[in-house]
Image (cartoon, rainbow, N blue to C red; front, side, top):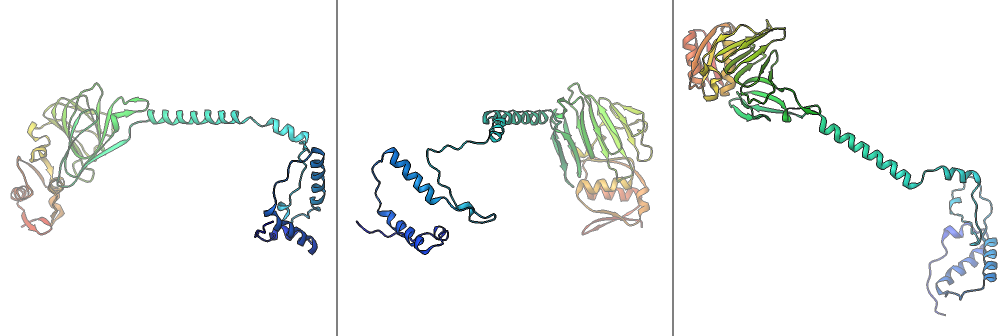
Length: 345
């Protein structure tokens, strides 16, 4: 027989044998295992007798509660022995749903959740989109209904994707405006509504401009180039405007003022590089110039902001506009490195 090296008896086995002679005997068997060859099959009676002897010799003594090694002690069971579960355990097992039933329930729940999420996703209103024109620039965009919008400098407009409402197309096309914008509305059978901080402008198909600067003295001003619009303030009542008319919803009144006449070329002239003001205070005109041309404009005396002015310049720039205003108002214009200053002589 060829001797083979083998690892020594594991400590996990040796520690459970209190007698040194037993450990040595088991160690000898352990070392001889690598050289063992399979034994030819034995008869059934002999095999059962062998299993009985092994079971009697290896059955462990009772394990004390809390013994950390209890999990390592294994009881050798004869292959012919059949262990029967108690009736109570059998009843508990029979009450458990079959695996296929549990899988079916989970599949139905997952499908229901998917349908719910899909329905909410498809039915909810369109997400809000926002377009912005930075200081010193204007921006042109098309809304989902092909309405064309031109935003003045430092202005923004918000609208829902596709003008979509809950479960269907929205009954009206609503946009929110902060600043100045010109709208060429495309007819599609639904009202088109522009909402500002203090007014609502409702149309079907027309072209008009809206100026809405909450921090300035004017309020929301609406100028109509084509068609008709209805202007509402926070208080009940509305003013109907036709082509060539304008109205203002002031901060204080919160209702639309009477319609006045305005020339068609004065409606949002900034789209073509022009500038106009119609009986407006300098406190509203000067900030508009600062936004449109991206410059700083200051006044030495705040009383200057209350002066009113009307002017129209078809091809304007900041130097020309402020020079004309200074001449008309009897002011001195100073050009500074950081912008302009208007002061009294």
